[in-house]
Length: 558
Image 1 (tube, rainbow, N blue to C red):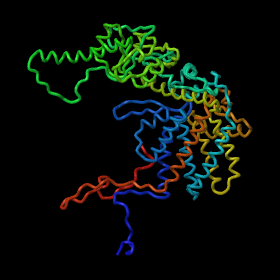
Image 2 (image 1 turned 90 degrees about the horizontal axis):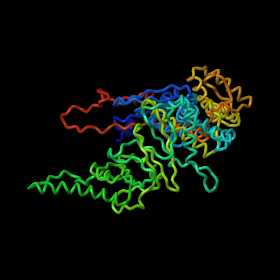
Image 3 (image 1 turned 45 degrees about the horizontal axis):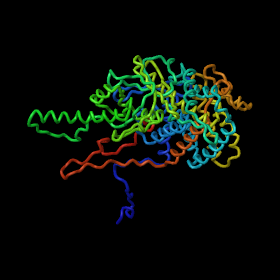
């Protein structure tokens, strides 16, 4: 007789399998996602705080960049990892706004938790959020302002807004100018007349030990390397340059080999064979007409010595990224072998070295050569790392602005305006979805509340003032966190690109919907150890009593 026929439960999972279902699973997931959002919320805005992250080998990272914080954390909870993916996607697609996306996602789930307690079904909440999302997209299109992509002053405001609150904050005016100069230098006009930014022709290099104010944009490339030999020439006004990604070294055996030597002459012939191969490499380079060799891997010192005597410069162990940039800059292919190399395989450019800075400055001289490098300088490694993150975000958002040509007022202005319009729209929504639409509007206002809270202002008072200004028709009214006043943030220079903001809201909705649709969590137990008769019964190491124990606390997913 079956267990079911006997009135006993039918077991379909192993004893070590853990399961959380229905309301408990929803609460578990929401707590995990909100824990991630709470971890980065205090970094939002110009007065956001920094986080110090120390890895298992003692490496310290100090930042308030949302995606960097989450990357450095060892997040184990699977639900929390889904929220981290929101940040990564926002960084890839939007370039900026990662903290906003995560903060809004956390608040959407917080509001959903309240609706679940009122017995609103998750699918009703998701439908309401999607309804509100469509109205939000419409509001952004209506409020967005078209700009002239040649307006460098406005582009500098976009860059400054992106960098505000990060390590670049104190020198943001200087750096914003460098960002705009870099993007402008690699912007071309397509056949249809649209602006196209080709970042393959733009590069960012860093140098420690100098003040930030000495950062600059340089035509060409900057390489922090030493010449292969100290007696090599380091300046060429017009050089033929060979790019290669394969090591120029002796081809030894791939496995350990034992060789028996019978006499001294045999040993000498073996050693000479190595020199002959290296000399052949050098002869191939000389025969090609190259003045400079730039190698992604290593160059043997014997080859360096031969080439030095021919007045040829070598630079080795260049990063793959820099090699790709040099390929575009010098209009030269990257070779994988020296076999058959000729002058047609070489690029042309000028090279000079600054011994004080230990840098090579390389510039293409071909008819179609173009490319610029932003050389960022900072006194310490930690400052330089945060500076680079801020500048990279600024480059991304300025690129989007040039391409899209639309911007929004920042400082929480767009969130409050969208929330106002969604509340007006909620009256036309039928059923319980109306509650979710209203909850969506409330959730968006977490951005101005977090800005105020992080600046030491009363978030409730600030939100009341912002709502009043928008009710009076001021769609650009946002929060000035430095004065605590409600101002026209567009005129105040707080400007954000449409693409980054739209993508942040969409990413937050998708993440919240994904979490809300989960009503069952099943965590499989590990494979049981092999057990022999006479042994002690196997015991779960997490619980000597033999119970699998509960899932980890969702409130602490790290």
